[in-house]
Amino acid sequence: MDFSSKLIEEAVNAFSSLPGIGKKTALRLVIHLLQSDIQKTEKFSHSLLKMRTEIKFCTNCHNVSDENICNICSNQRRDNTTICVVENFRDILSIENTHHYHGTYHVLDGLISPIEGIGPDKLNIPSLINRIEKGEVKELIMALNPTIDGDTTIFYLSKIVSKYGIKITTIARGISFGGELEYVDDITLGRSISARLPFENYLSGQ
Image (tube, rainbow, N blue to C red; front, top):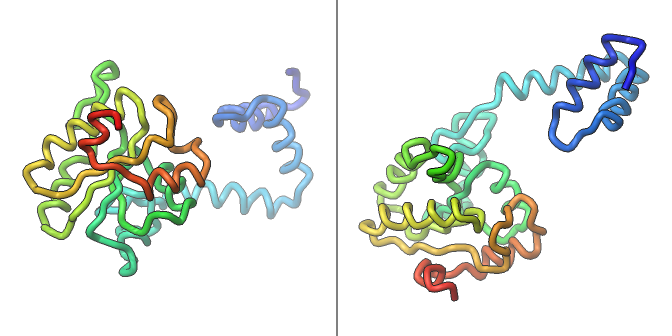
């Protein structure tokens, strides 16, 4: 793709570096901004920069937040006795959209993957243990992607928290093996949360 302007080319390259955006889509976005009022472009760029520089991560669950404690953890109407363990904050957005879950979350920020050199020490596991040790938690829902890495992480977590005597469940098998929660439709994901299974059933494949 040839450009008569180096500035246009650089802007197109910036947009096309984002996932799912090709050169043609990037060019349409750039042309739209070019033809818009400069105030609109300034507001657009300012919001992106403000998000990137001021975003925080909840000190309790590691979800993205505007404050030190996210609005889910600070919501007194949420069930603090139940923690839904997820891989990343995108999974929280997916589960929240189902409106089937009213507990709290814990973001691991990854999965155990020996092949990629990711061990338990690189995940937000110590803070999860700290929350459990406070004695309020009664159930852990393992809402991790049904993959080899997801299963490995579930087995590891279930082993280290077994001594606390809390209930461990997993999302139901409405989600096929190898799938990702981020791309599952709201109805299927909601039903999987509501029909969660005891961890023992997950081990036996029931």
